[in-house]
Length: 325
Image 1 (cartoon, rainbow, N blue to C red):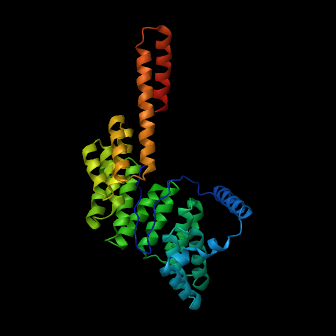
Image 2: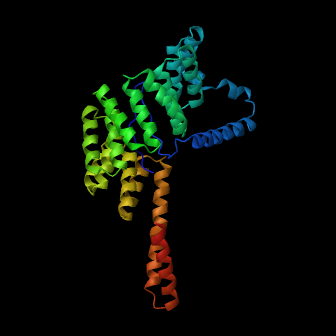
Image 3: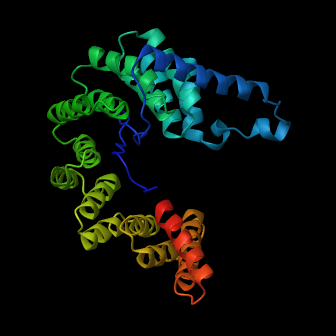
């Protein structure tokens, strides 16, 4: 999997990496997804165990003074804005259940808070349930029609559901509402890429980078578009220029692998693991390629053997290898 995707907008009204799950917007699919989610919750509850004293003392709040201060403030002065801000803080730290809880507290105090509905939509989407995010995404744009990030989030939900025309319209409106919103332009780039409109993707990604040259997602998506158009050198340059050499090299490896250049992919994965010794995924990809290259070499030796039986075995294995790639 590439270390890339839709834009990550760092502001409080941003959207996170877009889940690429495909889901139906029908009531049946929503009910089924909720059922799966509740099964997970019940399983976690059934297997819960009490914390010992050392575990209880070590919580996210005790390790994070800024979060602890924000929690104390909203406890003493509960407001919709305070709960929404606290929910965003939890979401930024990946604690989605606490984010969900506090967004709902914000809405309880202000049922017209479009930004809080947007936050709930992003939590459901990040949990992998874009169908359950749809209602909150609609409410977000209804109560905050001029909020660019709400339109953008609505677009990411529609894209995750496979409604590409609605997603593109939402991103374009977000871009008009906030002309400097590089995250919306980058999402237009990524949407064009997944639809196979490569020239449009390149144009949009370049525009996003003009607005925000430091956006790694836009640079990664531009690299993907270059790779899809066969311009591998330009793709490699963009991956490396993201500033994270190890991730850039890993992405080069994935693209090279997709292009059928196993040797270049192996070299890229090896270089990525050297750049970041703890990059276990890069090391695992290199191991897999070495294993495939070894098997392929052995199959070729069998195919060229003078023994008819060995040649037949080699040909059979080669067919299986080509089919599995």
